[in-house]
Image (cartoon, rainbow, N blue to C red; front, side, top):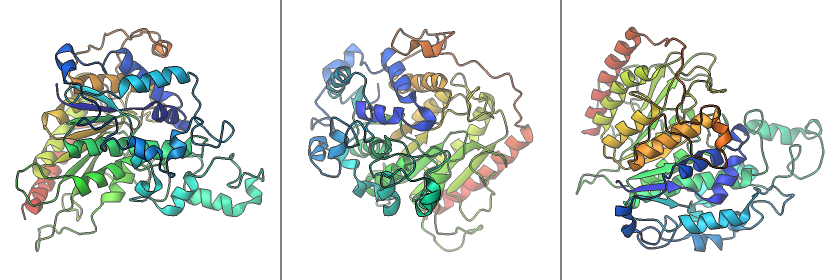
Length: 485
């Protein structure tokens, strides 16, 4: 079994459960993973258990969680009443405090080999860490105490009478699909800390795979919330890998290279925007331009009426930005389409030869998703989401696996539980019964892990496949040429 870190804490789960677009999803996902026994190690690995990471405590940064809990920037995250000033001030409620305390005690004794559950390192859950990417004014706004929908100051004045507040909220995207909510002050730093913890574990070499199902918020921008995403956790994690990561080639003096692979049905615009290189790479190549550290590749549905607006089509072979790639799909892409398009992904991986991978495994492309709508993906079979995880694992590169979209919550939980099983090396069939646990009614009427296949015809064509493969063959050779300089 490979070394796997599963990033979880009761605080993170409670905060993620309050996300307006995904109320209760976090509990459903983690509850199913736990009920299936995927967080239990087989007997031959139980004797490898040591306290924390490298025996230094439960946090991912040398046991700094205790120190962080005394930091005035994050003490409110550790308080009994949550992120507000009390039950009226926007805390994340807990219906069973005793059970959560038991869970935390049980899950902070991780093995070095096998799977271990690691809480987000709270030393990452500070405005200082968030400012490594996010704008200070944006953080000041989203991290302030919640006092209702109508005012920043706690007054009950209507928005129409407070136009500067309304304009500021609009400018920061905090309305419509991204409204402020009581747990936002806890949600933003905890999600960021979860992904940063996962990436730190990869850099330390104490995990080969790190799972953060509450992460993957790929639409968030530096100073603006967007598409249900308030914090650019993937961007922050990639920045850590770029700062602290090392090449896998012994003795190499080059900088670490990171591949961000986005499988969400929606284009990963926030991450692509953050890492689009300011350098233009002409084709044919002239001079000796330095390759960036990060390559982004988004496999997504693309149409004029699909979010985000202006999502790109197929990256042209002569693009000046061959490290910011788009691989679009027509409507109702079946697993067979993903399997065929995977040839393009393999070309990019071979040319780029990354030292770290961040995989965003959004599953809003599954049938019946209320937001995705145009998807016909599946967790099952060749080309399915579990198969994608297996292909990435076969590359043998330290990888952070993040969540993302997925708005039919039971199916999202099924897909991510099956992906977790693949990562930890547990064979679970699609006809496996959902174990009896507190959320079992969500899986009615079948009560199995199977996600029914879509009967809608796949609109992707052989001509589109051939064009994509021809284009990506050229792009991959361009990438290979530049990184060889």
